[in-house]
Image (tube, rainbow, N blue to C red; front, top):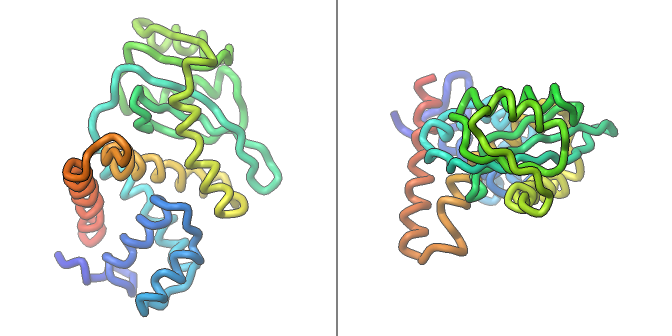
Length: 236
């Protein structure tokens, strides 16, 4: 299968679709920013087409990356942040491991016990229970962690949770670049893939921690994962 082929029912080659989806989820670009970047290369596509590609294919890329990414460390950090969507406030729950590797994000309306249970259920459906879970002082975590992760040590301390609080920053930067988020489902789809892309293209690459040779090797590995997902679009 060749990257100059177009997926079924699409006019543009899969290489262009893949590049647009990657740009949107890797950087703080809007759909119109990507439209302009492609136009500079004489590729004329509407921002609405780019939006539809991101909406349609985000889950596909996320699942391929999730299956290929490394196993998380056995220490997790959980935290929540508030997001305003069309004038309504939502709570974004996020989990990362000890190295900042994003495990999951989940948008919900509340910051209560039932919301914590739903989030932990998602996490434990994808990963084995960790050795340690670090949270802030939110009491909603206490009983769900005790019941669902009986062998896990729960550390509840605001000062220990900087790892996940730092992981919120790309979300705030994306929110600012887009002026505002438009819909809850759009936020969930966008941020779910953003975290997975950041895992392999930022954290694994180690921009500030690895030498140039190791960075190039890690970037090549990340690109190979993305290219594999791109190739699979043609087989879908």
